[in-house]
Length: 210
Image 1 (spheres, rainbow, N blue to C red):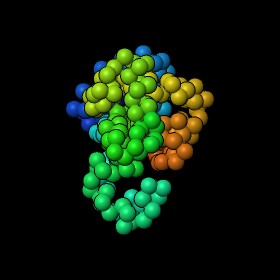
Image 2: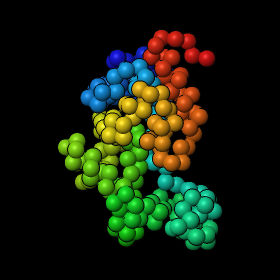
Image 3: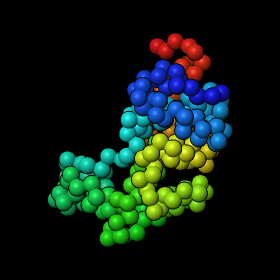
Image 4: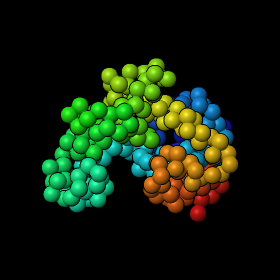
């Protein structure tokens, strides 16, 4: 099944964004065998939640509460006082909290901010950028902001999807398994992801949603 512009519009993706992303998204999905209604719906359900309807391809790194930072990253900042220097400081925040994770160097290396989450599924960490660059033949390590552009955002998302066996999970209607593969053990907003997937499937099959 081919994803079409009308499908995205039926899922309430803003028209300008839908027009911008439909061609690169269709190409990337076809190249990675996201080709059945069930696979497409599962992919789109995750993508809509991850990007707020394809509006944002960049991780939000600005936190206004030191306590919130301390609660989320207790191994990095043990209390609000220690986290105060990271409030509304995206670069400092990412370098501190993502140091030593997913192939990143230490805080001073700058890898945390350089390789923060980008793209439809928020590719994060030097190791993932290096792997995507190697397997897709794109200069993501040297130019990480390429993942903010539609072609590369779609390409890396479809690649990551297939790499993590999401086609097979979607075929089995294991939607929680898909959420875990995309979002990790936290499975944030899993109920919304399921609802968006079911809504997307209805649109793809030409059925009324509601």
